[in-house]
Length: 297
Image (cartoon, rainbow, N blue to C red):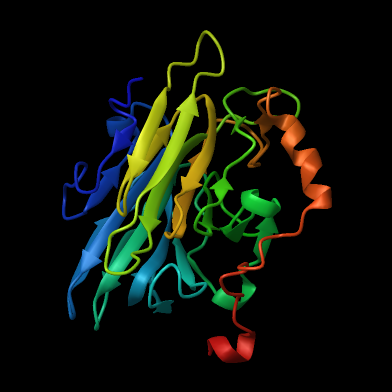
């Protein structure tokens, strides 16, 4: 079972000042990008957006994002397991400065696009927190950059938190064909696994071919900072092992004329959804809710 090229361990893709750097050229596809930027206290980083739109999302720490004559102050968060965060959207063909007085780690989620939208601020108080699944398939989704929530040209991005011992991204699903009820989207999974009792956590990710033209086949042990690339195929489950909560950031974009997350379940496992009606959502969820507008100030 080959993981070559699809599972990138933490730091393997580092370049140009980023700890993680995946773009269409390195991934061998057309649209989706992810960069992870680490800044020490007082450091700053400037980048050109080029032909892509981007969302700057604090993973830990706070920063200021300057673009098109505006400055967006991002309060951020202590960690991905501590709360919802505010973020900044920056358009293609722009110069951006990310500055952090106290330091932190920041995800830059990107997508090649055609249209230039205005730079703007996304408040944490407006991020919908959704609970999906039930029982051991329960998980939390922070829909900060979902297609039905935040306006962008092609970029779709969400965060998923899975309690220890649960299976997420299940039933396995795909979005690699342009047809009724399904959109074609390249996807990046970026993982962080919570430490427990002083031990770094692990999880597992499965991706398998969806047909004769699908070659993605991954069964990977993932750790904090790891990335899994999904150009095609059924993906799921994402497995949080007992004792260690799992977080992953999903970045998606593709050629579909409609910006939408339309998926198809693997018919062999789609029946699992029907069992959720008789099961409660995991009582450990939500990990947190979005702050009220007053609290976010």
